[in-house]
Image (tube, rainbow, N blue to C red; front, side, top):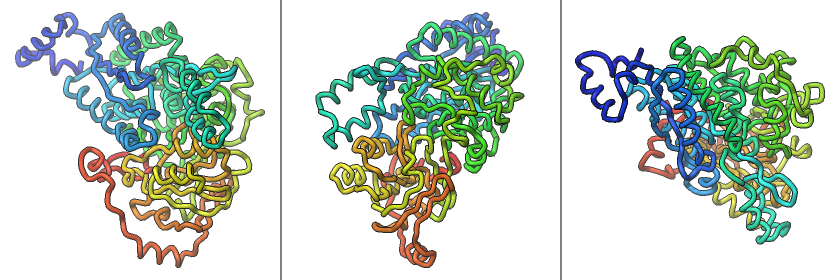
Length: 550
């Protein structure tokens, strides 16, 4: 066993005594040492219950003949960090989490890992760590939150972000908004819609690194979740014994499967950051172009919140991710031979059945005969940009408008709330990319307020969006403004043309004029000059490469 380097031989007597100090017996040290990385904390609703998940995992590990050893991981709640400087630490925390798992797992020579995430950046961070370390690993998440209820309708956290715009527009009272605050998020779990956390937990399942149900079984279904966690603990010991590693599972075929399912369910645009980053750590080249290629062949068959009214509990009851995979396999988009932690994808989906055709459509009755995410290019985004097409209203799919430019999210919010933004405008928020933010902040506040106010406008940014965002929101524009990308050269009053079906994003300004503006452009001073974010800004790459650090 790999862990023998800290357990066996005369020179390891000090190591063994340190293990004994923690209560590990000689018998315990003869077994595989399984690190159980638990992202429990008391600041993320999706993580508040993870102690129970970890305890179940450890029972499973012990039952299978391993020795479980728990250690922590940090996490950031994107919802609480939203709309202020804290959001700079959301995406950037992904790299911190990945690095810290590498440090602990390597320093203590674990034979295998069970990784317990649930929310936005923690899930991809742990998958990145799995790919980098390449020791037998299982990921088991905490599960989605149940939808809240208000006046007989399902609601979620995205409802509350949009409520601010409704109050501003006089469509809702502050008293009603306050009452809804206590109803929208009824308990533990990752926020109830198909936002980034739940999208990535579903991707974990499709990549083969999690068990069936990982992405959809609600957190409140504690019995099912504990059984899933115990099974995860048992499976990792089996993987150690058979020496099955993450890079055996997270192959090119696995990532293509994940993109196809992402397109079918209309997942978060953040997958276009996270899947390439995970692939990078697993030694797989995955470009943004792959998303567009698969999207053109895919079918959008699940209209989940925020693009629709269904939430994760509905998807679970309808057959879950296995049923989705089974259906889109009819398009030839699923590599059935791809390995998982428990066999192949084909074996997993063989007996899957759609239980509710209102939630999971068959491909003949797809909402769109293409994927829910589109990659747009043009002179405004030479290296690409990303939009959740499935959450865009039909009259905004092709749109031409006048630019209103803001050099920060805060400035844009102030303009929107003051009534400066009118129909016919294109809101441009720049210097919010990986380097410029730094940290590529999510723009849920401005998109939600725009939606809540009922404004028919487009929004462009080199930042990113929450999975809860909807509307004509185009993010990840690359190269970013801080690197002198074309977004930095847009002026108020410029005309911008958006054609989502044709995958075009164009600034209607002559090449000569853009060249003059480029020659006159000067890079702004960094917003942060000390600490982790300063180091992050110097090392992070563009959004089109997954914003990985090199």
